[in-house]
Image (tube, rainbow, N blue to C red):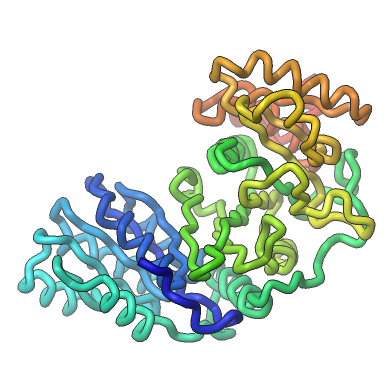
Length: 416
């Protein structure tokens, strides 16, 4: 089946959040729907299965979506859908509608009750997918405009949405730092420290970011962390499946702001609106640490302008590699291994990790920049390698941290 054409190269796509409720592990139907949304030019933020009403409402707010879609195959829909609607309304976000489906588990009588409770509509088995997509785009694709009534994370999210709409044509906006960041601790502690995270697809960047988030939450005396996760848009339909929240376990903490960005034709590894989004988060004064994840990058990619004469976008760059990078010759071609402030070899439980670690460290030694390789296993909670990587980020960024309830102190003080 051919991809549905985009109606406009610059029109902001409909953004829909999809999820499967608590105690429900049936994801085959929602996966099909996600692909169909992307084929029709929509941006899908997928949370995964076994999601709480609180997590769904929080994600809908931070992602500033047009609509929430729930797939329920395990019963309990009368209570769960109502709870999601209630959580949205309680936070002043009742303008975000909720729809859903459930094959044969949601009856017509159930759907009537659910509509009275606030669910906008239910789709039943047998509904033609093209008709469903057309109806959803028509009824929920309202323009998301500036609104002075919005507060908190919704206000931040809307500002980012407006930046995305402005730069959807693929033009890179101004906003990069005028001065190249150095490999020394930040001169102005208390301001947001921004780390760009790049690496090939499959390196485990999203899982590593989630584990770094957990360290920030456990060790930080307060403050917030933000994650900007970039994923590619389809070059034909313009749609995208933004799936990094599936790995973001710790994004359910109120101290975490997580926003998914689609590249929308900007072929640098990040959205054209990413610089503006970073500045919006910086200007809020709420975030001590901002992590910006690029799409999976290649050998010559430089998503954060590490080698750009005018200076780069982030304060530091972390490059993440898996052990299976293709051999020593391939390793020598990767430009960011020269320019990155921090380098991590992830998935170090892989049999190839021992050789990879020696080859990468030799490559870094030849750079002559004093770069240290961090060996991590992000899929393992409480991994010591991730601990050391977070320590290095905290030191570089001058982040105040503490261990086990101790008085907050810098990482250098902790090491003493």
